Length: 75
Image (cartoon, rainbow, N blue to C red; front, side, top):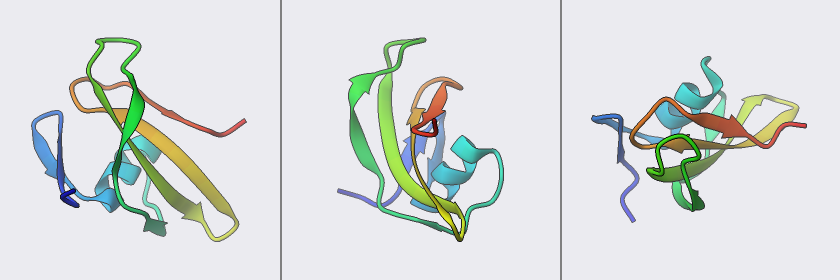
């Protein structure tokens, strides 16, 4: 699967997708994958990426390709 994906009309890398989810810069991001769920707001396709917002934290984030919805696995 391609490393770049289209999110809300623009091409993003794993790093930029993680930054969209986090709304801040991240240290490192893994490869983008398809989430096994649809967007709860618009029923669009959801992408998933694992990333490190800091040296002590690993987060899995999800972002809709079509709307502003995003979520993380933080408790």
